Length: 570
Image (cartoon, rainbow, N blue to C red; front, side, top):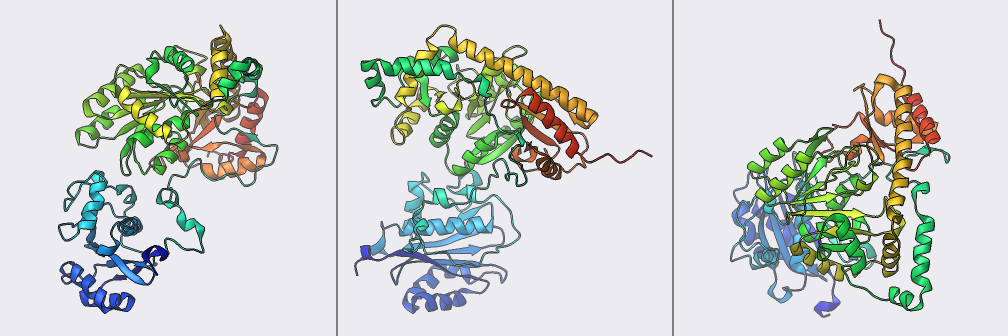
């Protein structure tokens, strides 16, 4: 049987609390004495003088029934050491090293330790070559946590190793899911918006996500725009063809004028989340740190988790970001790759970042070398107060992401990124290797609508009026129903209200369950906490955009009914 006809698979030999002889004996039982002697020799220096409490893990890769590679790890009481990685010369370049590294990464994740020690040298060419491909030309004995190529796996601190399970066959012919990539199969730790309601009646009032009001969506205006594009023979054929990755110039020109940017720095995307994903893919390596507001948008945390990023929460309140504490972290050397911020009518709090905080954040980005990513989908929905300028594009460290979802409709799946040329080039490379470009038909129809004088402004003005009425109805109803049991913020725009219950002993998880049975649903504040610290255990987020004033009043009443009666005062 040739090598190509065999199947690479992995077996973890064992966890050990004994010396090298015990390790050699176990290896011999698995792969034969000759190969076991080589493995034992490779780990002897690390295993002979091991404390009895230490633990070893040896991983062997087989090609069919032949052992073709191994990795040996040692637990030194604080860290996990990669003592040895070896691949038989006749199997180098066949994926054995990558497979071993995957198991090492999984083992470290199971161990939950913050650091993996790489003890590599000339005798370990496979490990050195593999890490060099990741951009690490020299592997120090104690590499900083932030520089580890897979440091995203070492988040939790556990008192000891707990896993003694063997690693599954990586390429099982019986289970097609073993063909899935590590990016897809690794565990996502972000909880999203939390578990779905289980006792919610069909007629329930759902006060959840940022869904636009049906009455605010420009169905008639878009119908005319699409009709104009598709009724013109030559124009319709052109709109059905391929386009450029960056988007058509007329649409980019409108966006550029709207943003105060140059059209060459605009990239049209399939919505804001697509834009965020492109930026994250262009900038982040697994283990990179991203600073985020606390609280923040759970879906952004979910996407960051997908890319293996670690989040650094920065507290956000009604008065702004705690940039003093953030700057202390920067001075200490804890510099993120990105600071992700929602500056206008933030999700979930509905607050707007002060002008001074915007300026200072850009100054810090310039000084310390991180990127500020402004995700601003609610900016157009201001119905009170004075507008605040977005983060300045004069800095090449500022990136803006936005969307037509909240004004013209999420079904269009159209948004944009404004970025400096150094990043735009990278975004277009990613785009050309994935979806190539956004729908040309939709882009053409949007140009038709946006170029019609006063149409877009009228659509936005209509939405602002609808959301003002609904925000006011919700605020008044909650205040009337719950009084001093809640803090209801003044709302100047956007589509969310961040409610704080004043009784810290109130169990909002139980309150939500009761409210669900009564027929109303909302989001718990705990799921907007990037640190999962319990800081927002007394908060709920209410989305008021796609419910009528009457439904909002009823919803507030049902929430009040779910609140346990106060104990009488004595």
